[in-house]
Length: 175
Image: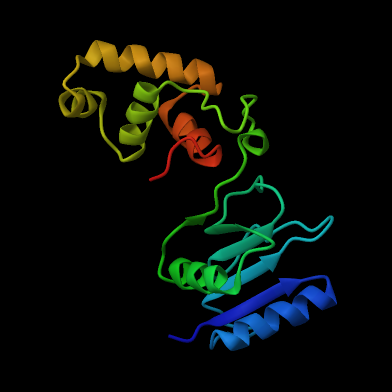
């Protein structure tokens, strides 16, 4: 499957290299009607806020604005091709990021959550209700609520969606 990719890169050397990678993968660089936008974030660049196609951002740090795909700038050609195809198919693509870049003060090898809190956060991220989580884990709904309050505090989150987002951005959970 060949994709039409709008390439946004301010550095001419990076633009040339990415154009070659896209061509090697069988994709076409196109200015109009793209299937996906590939944005290479150099110094001072900001990703497009609105686009007619999903955006994959190549960056050295986690972007503030949500995008369909976020990858490190040193991503391999094979991974970039897979990410572009996945995003064009409607999937979200995220590379693991160090916890510090997502606002976690804990050391990279140390999770800010207990194993049970991580398990509950993963199930919440999968869309389960407190009652469904309790049934799945064989614990009471009150215990689930206790763990949720604890993980909200540890992550600095005020609700379930924010906790899941911080868990994903910090690499604590994967969905």
